[in-house]
Length: 239
Image 1 (spheres, rainbow, N blue to C red):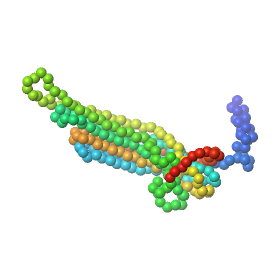
Image 2 (image 1 turned 120 degrees about the vertical axis):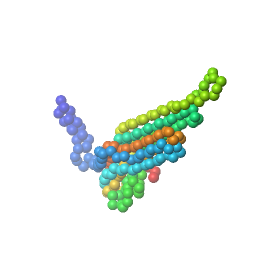
Image 3 (image 1 turned 60 degrees about the horizontal axis):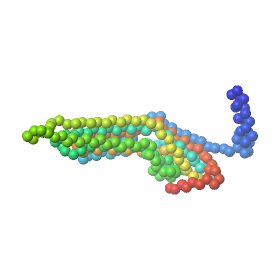
Image 4 (image 1 turned 90 degrees about the horizontal axis):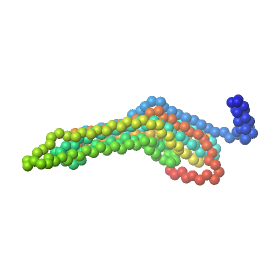
């Protein structure tokens, strides 16, 4: 049954000109991937009014020759790893809210330029539509406020001790986004890069508090295919 179905499908494709012959349309495809995990950013603080910020960069590059009258359809996949931790302490003596904040995220863009052009493609290349997109972002804020009173006593008393609250979140998830490079010159070999930027921020307003954030990019892949837009397709690519 499977052989019969395959034979029927092959016959239909041949009759439509998809296999062999002058009427067949050629396409170009390439891919590049990495399987390691790269730490991009780490921020940590346990000192009041002294926020910490860090960012890092990673890229995955593929090469392809642009066919005549075609665009490049570029797909980027990656595993985003985010860790955020906030711990806040509140007491009667301190007064007001005690806070700890953590921000972790990965943004990405696709950039391309002729392979023989000098310089970094992520710094000097043309940005593919739709531009910079967030792969994964998390903002976490923890607040603690303690306001306790002694009722039913003629003397003013102070309650000693504190309340401590902590929150740790760790996620790992695969994401994908499509990009487009349009109206490319014929027969030019392009260097296409998926450019990942990780950023981490940590801040506390109390010396007893702690905030931490960490960002890493795991397995990632960029795929590039030469495609032809349908006549009359309306799309706008801005730099």
